[in-house]
Image (cartoon, rainbow, N blue to C red):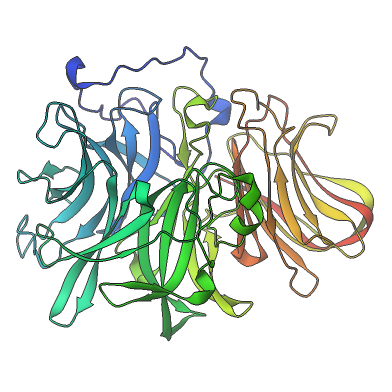
Length: 529
């Protein structure tokens, strides 16, 4: 399983009732059939944005927005899980809890190796969390969001809030989500923070020598998709096509609402950064910002660069300090349009697979390419050199307790449409349909007839992305877990992620070609756990 769910798990600290937000939790039967095999979920609580992703001492730490006392949003604290392989996660006690003064919103963690903060020693440097304090009524900063610190001297297992919090405030109600990293300045390394003024659709950059005192460096935005609030920024360098001499900076900005598939999503910009100012490449910018909440702007919205073209990949950020300079991202597997209504119990919501991201030249400009981090494959069944014409070929069913991996190379040929039916019922009717239309050059994922879609009116949907073939070949890597599908097309140049909640008995998988002949050059189906 993706997380250990034994009864010996340490319990979160219990807050006095006066410090908790009143939350009505709908009575519901347990839904173990929706519990993912290789995606992280908390045992019996709510989670949302990943926070403070850091690799330290041989362990990956996944912190996240968590309600320790219910399975809907509220009482925001930092939950915590650990892993050595980015696939199998162990849930830990709540790391940084809300209290009578503040809710603990999103942020990041750095390894302060030089002990610039003074929270550790030269022999035992600290981990330092930079998080957003959402101050409550009756406190000196009531109604504002500001940046605060907590530190750990035991490799991220326990945390102490800094007595001098907050360390950075703009007297703003929507100043949040700091991502901090070290930058090699002219006088030695310094800390850089990328945060957002969410309602103004701006990323604000600050610099510091010690993590406690910050100076404004620059601002970026509004730009490209601006229909909702900007949240959870990230900024990091990547070599283009693996060439360290040719490196570019990637600025990730998550957006809600107004994303390309509706509601929540993540966009990115490629450009340069000098330690103070991010300058986007002209190929990263639209001529003017676009409000994606207006249907009239749908075509322009699709010109932005999106991390994922599906409904359910949001608040994605990357790990600090990852080994071998790898850039690894995780996103929230959900969408604010219906997040509190998902039909799972006792937990609600989970994380995407970890994805390693690189920059590759695509059609003359550097673009993000994403590849999932997966466990070893088992029970591999293969097909090669098979022609399909107006037929459906049954593949192995999804096996309960495992995820299914489909890896395919298909030549669409003269077919009008090729693709896969996922979670099909015994009659082959109801299913999530992943299809490619060669004429339109579109990859689509339709979940409107796939299981339980009635829990929220915004959930039934069909998403699509432009997709070009490579030498006439459609290449797909599809990960089907108990309530989600993540599609990595053309080696990860295009990604589509959606939640799906199949009914009992919907476990069938098949590949099809409609309206003409297509060829399966290669197809492997395997189990993951």
